[in-house]
Length: 104
Image (cartoon, rainbow, N blue to C red):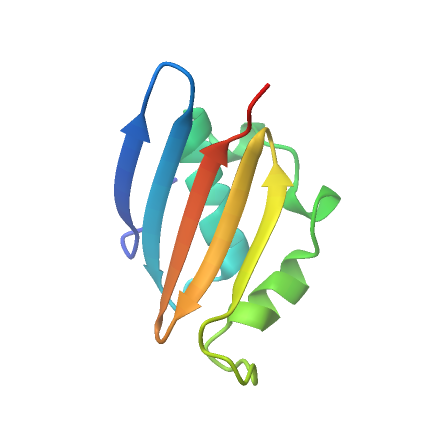
């Protein structure tokens, strides 16, 4: 599942994987996180543990949504998901999602 809105940059090394994607603010942050991790893990999004088992997707979407009342437009959240550290940041009308493989 790949969003038409997302742009993707992959950096892969023998010891770690990092995937960096950018989305328009209209893309739900929860979906952007799942899509980015599925790309990093090289699997279908349906193979991942449901995001709600790690973080509240509705709260994540509300925090980063285009209608968010967050005073700081540079909002950033990080959490662990499926062996990756996921960092979501809002920069004006863009979401940046980065998934970095956690050290074992």
